[in-house]
Amino acid sequence: MRTVIYPGSFDPITNGHLDVIERAARLFDRVVVAVAESESKQPLFSLAQRLDLVARAVAHWPKVETDSFSGLLVDYAARRGAHVIIRGLRAVSDFEFEFQLALTNRRMNEHVETIFMMPKDTYTFLSSRIVKEVSRLGGNVSGFVPPHVESALKRRFARRMRRPRAAARSA
Image 1 (tube, rainbow, N blue to C red):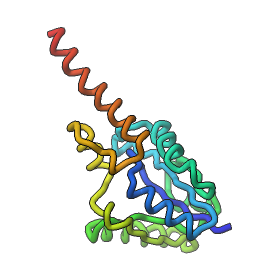
Image 2 (cartoon, rainbow, N blue to C red; image 1 turned 90 degrees about the vertical axis):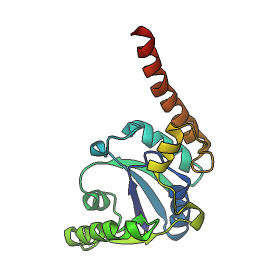
Image 3 (cartoon, rainbow, N blue to C red; image 1 turned 180 degrees about the vertical axis):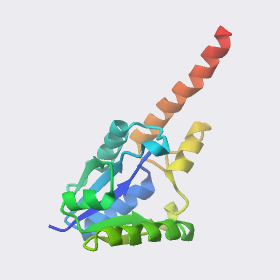
Image 4 (tube, helix red, strand yellow; image 1 turned 30 degrees about the horizontal axis):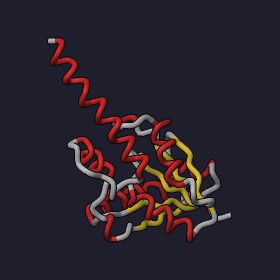
């Protein structure tokens, strides 16, 4: 069985991520969407929440599963029996960093290959960071993320918006 790992923080998962996952599922027998712990990035959603959002987004693809990991990606890939890692590239600016990671991973485990995939051109501008910022400012992200992710973002930012007002009233 040809297994590929698609790692990321997925904070949150976007339609660009889903485009890459869907195309990977056409090329491989099993796609493992591996949600990185990423505590150093100070994620908006907890690991459990990100896993749930991803799992719900990919539930309709039988060849796709979700998991989480911490530590070295190549070690995780080896534990999962995967010899391929997929990394998404949106723009040339992504390439240099991703290229360095791929070469580092190859140096640590020469049996794990990295494949770069670009999302459809309609998603090349899209990133989780941009989605969070647009949502935080009250913008419409319905074209950028699945409906359940949009709802989660609205709930998260509604809570953050209520806190400062409540503090202001009590002052």
